[in-house]
Amino acid sequence: MMADSHVMAKTNRRKTRRATPASRAKVLKEALAKKGWKQCHVAKAMKVSPPTVSRWFTGKRAPDRDHIADLCELLDIRPELLL
Image (cartoon, rainbow, N blue to C red):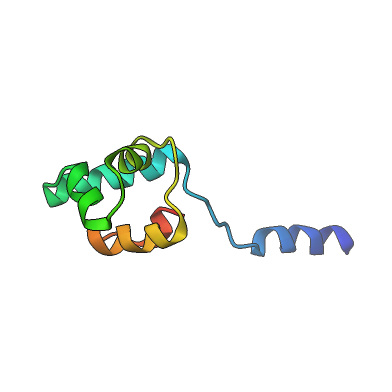
């Protein structure tokens, strides 16, 4: 009986995946291309430096939560794709 409940508990868990640096960068690049913008447009709109935006778009750094909200609004993407 105990083994069965363990299996059921395992199958009932929600699978939540965190965005990897590569997947986050891909989402950002695709959204940027869809808008027809360059990274400098994002930097200016968000009032951050171009190297900061470049790090987000290459996957070297992740934007903080405040920036994620702004990026999602600016690029019309869902926050779950970046978290």
